[in-house]
Length: 356
Ligand SMILES: *Cc1c(COP(=O)(O)O)cnc(C)c1O
Image (cartoon, rainbow, N blue to C red; front, side, top):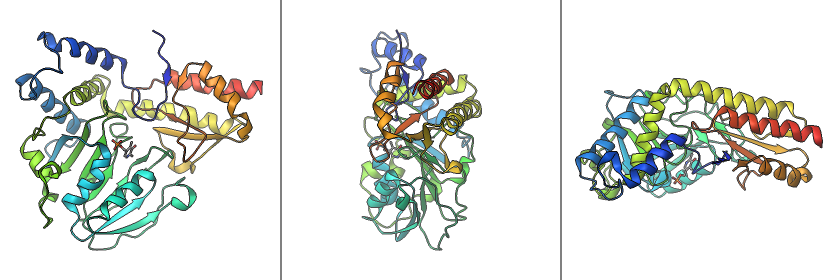
């Protein structure tokens, strides 16, 4: 099988060995003779999967025994836009507007209380991360987006919020780099970018921030209930949780987050140095804010687009088209993408420059 080099932004590449093990488990889960898809989610075998996935998530973030709980929920990161506000917004919350996903989170939160947008890069099509904003007193929380998947910007530092809880949408860069995850009080991430198939959303929450709003929270929206029920209030997305567990085990076998960060750094340095060197291309974002996960770039001469598209497509590359709101190209280089794939892309860019 000749697998394309998959630069898709999400759903996206996962390790091949995870796909192989997952496909096996659809037929025969761990030698039980039964499919992972037909056993009870209350069976010992599946409860073990859920427990393993939850504990590996905390382990990789270095958040074990620090008052955090890991939950697997449904509804994607988009459901978390409203759940965070539902559970935590009493009066006023602060948001950083760094991209479409941030803007969507803001829109949902506005239904629950006052939203203060502390900084925004919308005016320049979100091509940088705003800095130097002040954080007012009396916020219920501050919400940020660590990696802006569509634009290719990534926060390298996070606001120091003191006692104010810090919430972060890490959908597209969770488990990709070593940062102090304990500076966050709630982290969420849709599975389909660095962890597993769409359908599950990881929520890591510090328990002591919960239970403080006065509104009544419906069961399916209630973090405290999901903690109490060990992520099994209702039928969880079993396959998505299982494949997430396999990916987290793969990450452990490959040296964890610190080892994967080195690889991610090497991949992103390779592509960005070519974007800067190659006379035909230019980067879309401010250099200091460049994402290690999603590199966005454009052709200086748009008329070359059909020629370049033909070239990379014939080189067995997949998913390189930029998001419609940015145009150009986006190379998403999630944990499972090998450096060889980035080398192929760089070769294609070099070849294009030579032949044009
Ligand atoms: C993809 C993405 C989302 C949306 O995720 P869904 O699971 O589709 O709701 C939200 N935030 C970021 C940063 C993303 O990359």
